[in-house]
Amino acid sequence: MASPIIQLKNVTKEFKVLNRHEGLAGSIKDLFSQDYKIIRAVDNVSMDIMPGEIVGYLGPNGAGKSTTIKMMTGILKPSEGTIMCNGVVPYDKRTQNAQNIGVVFGQRSQLWWALPAIESFNILRDIYQIEEKKYKDMMNLYGSIVDMDALMHKPVRQMSLGQRTLCDILASFLHDPAVVFLDEPTIGLDVAMKSKIRELIKMLNKERNTTIILTTHDMGDVDALCQRIVIIDKGKMLFDDGIDKLTETFGAYRTLSLSLLSKKEKADEARMNELVQKVTDVLGSNISDKNAFTVSSRDDQIEILLDEKKTNVMKVLNYIQDESRIYDMHLNEISTESVIKKIYEGGLS
Amino acid sequence: MNMKKGILFYLRIYRKIVVQDIKSKMSYRADFIISMIGMIFTNICGALGFWLIFQRFPSIDGWNYNEMMFLYGFSLISATPAQCLFDNNWNLRIVVYDGSFIKYCFRPINLFFYYMSEVFDVKGLGQFLFGIIAVAYSWNKLSLPFHWYSLPLFIFMALSASLFVIALLNLASATCFWLVHSFFALQLSNTLRDFAKYPITIFGLTIRNLLTFVIPVAFMAFYPSMPFLRETQVQWQTYLTPVFGIFFLYISYKVWMKGALAYDGTGN
Image (cartoon, rainbow over all chains, first blue to last red):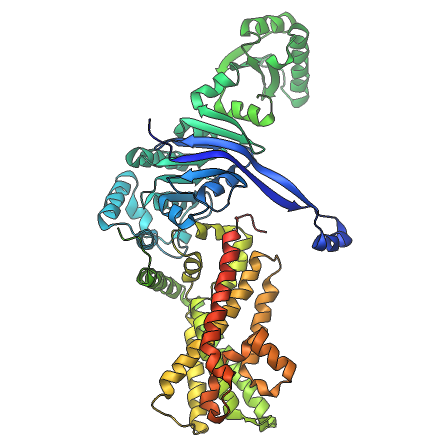
């Protein structure tokens, strides 16, 4: 087996934060205060990332994602534990590490704002000391994936967000780095551009076998790109496995959507809430394990998220049918999004 | 592949970035012309202020109009490198607070260089021109001797003096890595720089020492001008100008880098 390209061993990062006091008197007090509290942004995280993997690094805002990324890119030094990135300790050899990585931050372009993209690429070629032939090969590869002529000769400041992101991603792969960090690359983009960006990332990963660490809140990105996901919340790692294992690990969930109202009845909010309550009561009196189901409403549908390890669809349908007429029903596999949402909410663990 | 990044490596990148920067600035033609006009007016007003003062007082503490003009011109010249090459210091505060400074942290080149290379302020060249005119004019009016070594010495002294201006700017802007309201530091440094135009002998001893040892503004024009203005009154500080300049610049670079490397992208 190949050796990992990135290795995190028991990485913990703590920040010292001043306990702030309120008001003017408080501010003056803060000036001399030694009253610190320790915040653990990343708590004992370990992982091995293999060359060529695309890893989705997920977690709610403030979970410790960017802190981890900053440690992997060398901006921050872990309080405890060690990180190796491509044979280099990133926070000790920041410049050397920078030669081997590419970074894209969602909405912040790293290209020279006033320059056409091609000029930025030219400067990057010098900065990373990319050989003539390699540079040409890369540009040819890019040319085969995207329409470079339309993109390269326009100053970055005149580009749309989508074009800019595209250029930023191309720029981050230009020196053929071993690892590329993509932080929310599709944020704020329309559907067509999103899929274009995903296609590009996928192609570059395949062509250059580049390892990609992707943080995102868009499950579309995850479904399209990642074979493996790592979920972190409150600094702790909750999940690290193949995306196909996600549903297995977190229960055999399925979503049952029911129409309990005839076409004539108006599905206003009060009525739907009433129905949700009713269904919850019915199921509650029949199923002893309260974690087996979650009832909610979407438009005129009642949605029941079922854990099939604890109950089954037919039983649930029976209980409801005893009380109410079912006009229509659908049974869906749970989406990645719903699983992640449940994990964030702490419903699963 | 040769991975060693020597001065040639940096010079080549710098040239490339600056050429592009100037090209793109020219493309904002109105902006370019207006800022040029603004610069010319600022300097004319500065010179006018001088002239007005000397309409009333023929000399200040033994320093006449033309000598003062020389110092004024010298201070403009020595401020040119800081103005042209290190002007991005003025934006540092903004990119540090909004978090975009982090983009400079991911490149395999010197952070300070990378950040400064982004802006080349052409306006500085206009200022330089004014400085040259002021010095040449007063040199002529004062009938100062012009030896074979005068020009190289002048260039050497002006460059040495410029190190202080750069260093002061670096230090003032680097305060934003630690302070939230750091603009006052930049303003203060600008105000202090105004003292460079005056011969420090007109101040009391306390201020004189302050401007020599604490905030070395006197090295920006006064001490390095002495060999030309008053050859017989050259003090030891004049000889130490290049050494102090390098030292002060080095300190400012270290402080700047310390702040930059501690930066973690979340602001303060």
